[in-house]
Each structure stands twice: as C-alpha cells, then as structure tokens.
Length: 271
Image (cartoon, rainbow, N blue to C red):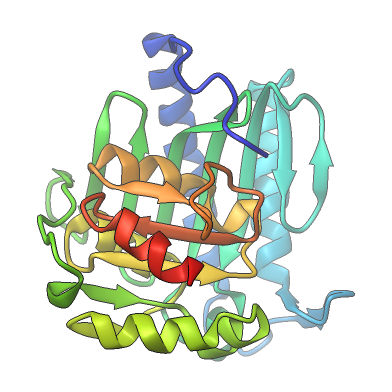
C-alpha cells in the first residue's frame, strides 16, 4: 500500500467526522480490552504464523467491525484478525491489540490502533493505550494530540534534536533486526546515537510524537502495526517512511523520526 494522491485535497468536515468516529471506536475497544487485561480466564491461542491471539483481540476487532458496518457501510476494512474486505478507496486499518504478547503476560505496553486510509494514504490515526491511560490521535490538518491520564488533551510536537549524536533511538527488538539482516547496521547506528532503548510497540511512536525520543525503527511490521502513526508522527512535525526511504506502509519496515534526523537514519540503514 503506497500513499497515492498524497497531495489531493481532503474534505475537512468529513475528516473531522471520521476522527470523531475513530475516537468512539477507541472508547469501545478500551472498555473491552481493559476488562480482559490480566484476567485469569483469558483465552489464548496461536495463529498459523505462530503469533498469539487472545479472546480480547477477537472481541475488540469484532466490535469495531460491527460499528463500522453500521456507520460506514461503504468503507473497506483491513484488520489483523479478520482480514480485508470492501473498498480500498476508503479503508479502515485495525489492530485490535498491538502488543498481544505484552497483553497476555500482563505487561501494560499495548494499544488498540485505528487508522483511516484514503487512496492508500493514512489520514486519521488513533492509538489508545488504556493500561497506560494514554491516547494519541491525529488527522490531516488538525495536528497531533495526546490525552494523558486526567490531563487535558495537548498538542504534540516532535523534538528539535538535529544530530544523531544527541538522539534517542528506539529499535523495537534485536531479533527483528537480526531476522531482517540488519543487525550489523543496528549496532552501527547504536554507536552513532546518544542513547538506544527498545521501548517497543505503540509506546515508541507515541513518545516520538511527544518529543521524548527522536528515532523509531523496526522490521516485520504489517500495515495495521504502523498506519495510525504515519498521521500521528507527521502531524507532530516528524517523518515516516520504510527503511529504504520509500513512502509506504506495506514494506514490512518503518523509520519514524523527528524529521531533522530522517535522511541520516535512512542513509545509515542503507550501508
């Protein structure tokens, strides 16, 4: 999925309604997922790719799909658990629980990810992490925002760090990079930055948009893992591409930065 028609004008009124719907979907997802988090009777199974899925993943995506079928019947859906259906001109991209492995172990670093893509370009994004009491969201032209606990929502801005030697990098996991054949380049990049950590999953991108980290990069990611963060990061002033610098969410890799560091990071991954 490439970002076609990236400069096509958007209907701001329609986009505002889509964002409002995405936030309501996140409310429903939070209620369902939190009720199952750290539950003693949580049902866990393995998908054909050997990744785990819980009854909470299935319930959240099913609930979101039912609401979208009622309120946006002409829109398509791409979901992690139930696949693709309908139009790709307007397509909702859903990860019911990003960080399922964390969820089933009781680790609070997980989130529901909801995006709307128009002609392949993400234009609305919501990442809701109820165990952290955090929610990041954005839509094109309306900025990027965070609701953190009981605080009032605040607009986000990426950091102003301009040198890799001053940058904080979140790289997700060593195993990802090793399996992708990029481990040597990760080690080299880690030697170029001020600090490296594997915060992981949605939290890394959220902190990038907040200006708390400066670079996030990972491999073996699907569209539903990253779609909302394209909007959230870019509306906060950052950049989001695949590892080779291409503008797509289908390359199974991602590089998100504060913008100032983007060319240097992509160049480091090419060598």
